[in-house]
Length: 169
Image 1 (cartoon, rainbow, N blue to C red):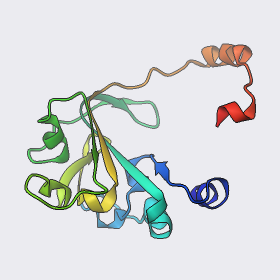
Image 2 (cartoon, rainbow, N blue to C red):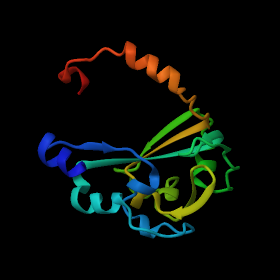
Image 3 (cartoon, helix red, strand yellow):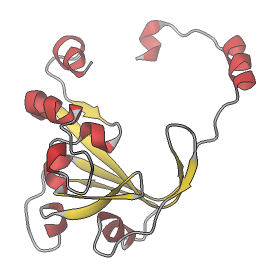
């Protein structure tokens, strides 16, 4: 799909890739504490299209989230010195950091050195953030989605109006 977007639909353009962190990291095999360590789609895409991509990792500090099976779970406490604890100290609800143009200097070594960051807000993984993402989006407090019930979905389909294709792009 990304090849199609970059080579056919939007040639000579850059795209943002935003999916689950483990799928889009530039070099997933270098992330430690995860089992199994696998090369991800992000690795192959970055090898082929690194200059045409902007990859965003998403991390959170606290709250509740949901699994793909819609099971609600608690975000576990941040580890001292972790990505989550560093962002928490900013005392902002939301933070975004562009790693793509950063150069090592006083105060940003955490971007260039191995650091713990939690997958799904619960599983400690160690990585060099600058080697994995172009940017990080951090959310202080997350809440699980409110899932649409099937009867609401069916009603919604009846009320759905079809837009012209060019308005959907």
